Length: 298
Image (cartoon, rainbow, N blue to C red; front, side, top):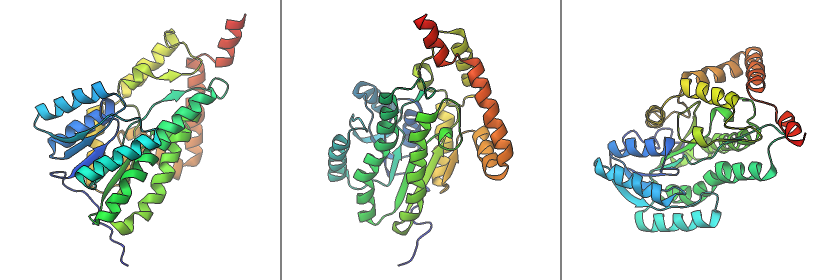
């Protein structure tokens, strides 16, 4: 059997069935709005039913088409399976499946609690796996090819400080994508791995940093610095959809992450120096959790 290399590329979204998670806010919302403007037939989900309904109204008010919208927690395997059956049964196989939903919790090994590690893996890694299980086999069976887009993170590439639990989930997404880019090629299904850097989404305001007082001056300064160099969700959406339509595997939403990844691969000594500098800066800017706990105990 031959190995089609380009049949799966989705160059034009007009009339193509696109499913995406995390559609109610942030990058997911921006991608849904832009894909709607490009003529995609959208099939959307998010954990928040009310916010999802508002996005559907927004898309339709600008001329976009939403054929399916239903709230689901992607961490719930059975619920995603049922949604997949209803979706495929009523609308057929998707042309594009986009795993965008995610949560973020940062912290040191001493500050992170087990339930936080578990929740990150359940949502950020098992969530995409549940969607892949439910929706990719029908894509294979349809014989039309298509595209799978998995949103990981810069933390799925490089060793960012205080990101061990988050990176566990995002490196997992990277691993799944790295295998599927070859496994699915013979079915004409392309795979794209998105590795955003700083993106100014509502997640930046609600992010959980274990053991750190989010009202402290140190945290607020760090948050302001993050926002200063962050791209907008709209800019991220442009990069994601453009990269997908060009058939790219690696998709970056900002130049800094592209450069950091290049350093890691081609100048590892410089990458190590950069990561050590970032770690020193993070621990200087934010109080150590152990110290905070000791102060509370005193």
